[in-house]
Length: 381
Image (tube, rainbow, N blue to C red; front, side):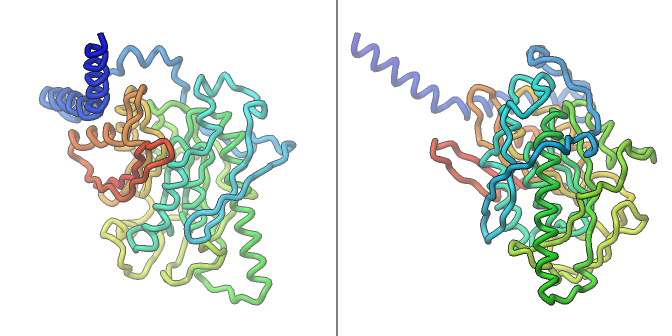
């Protein structure tokens, strides 16, 4: 009996060890088979598995206005310090602070907590900028599954012209994302004003930026119907373009202006795109020369969005509709494998590999205290 138990234990351990590789091979084989019989994209005309319906009704996409946020609640925050001395605020939110938990669904805790992947994504974006591989100046940015929205907030502080935040729940946006965005931009503005009062000369490139901010809630299926940069018509947004209290500027980690790129910024809602001097960034960054009327987002940010295998296809379908071609880039942060839900960064990459339209580089990986491997991938056309 002891020998049998030992063999069974070793066999189970071996199966657990082979599970990720076995899953990748099986999923890749299935997708390759579907690709051979599909007339276009491997995900075209593909229905979601029936199990997806068991997770509850899909929340219809909608835009959430900052005016819907209650102004009576006080904002309590913690200060987070990132690499290079960058500091951002993270609001303290508890389940009792939310007024409509039903709209969040069973996994509402995911919107309340700040994942380590979001923190690592901000650090990775900062290193990308430092290495000359990325610039947010004048760019149009979309953060999917935003929660606290720290990666998108970082994009605002680095000079993005337009930043859109998306989350499954409108309640998360009203109670967490929007207050956090406003608090961080007001904090950065006050830091900048303090430096200016100290006698610092204001230059043309450090003039005030007003990033165009929008917030969208709902399931990824059909989300492109409300994202303003994906629409093909000229219909105005239901929200006002002028969000008071959401004005921001371009800052370094210490709150100083960034002048070394010698860029001249214009409002993204104007007819002219940002003018820029040649830089050492990659070729995709030169795409702004075509103006801001071209559809799609220049940069898409995601952290912990690839955890569920059932939602990977609709997530991939959405980003392919949203990512600007041919210069758009996407950063995906998450665990290598999510045991139990079947997702992971490697499973998402399989979809991209089979589709064959995006390239990808692994630009960061780290292991947490629980020995979970987490990664940041950069995708590009």
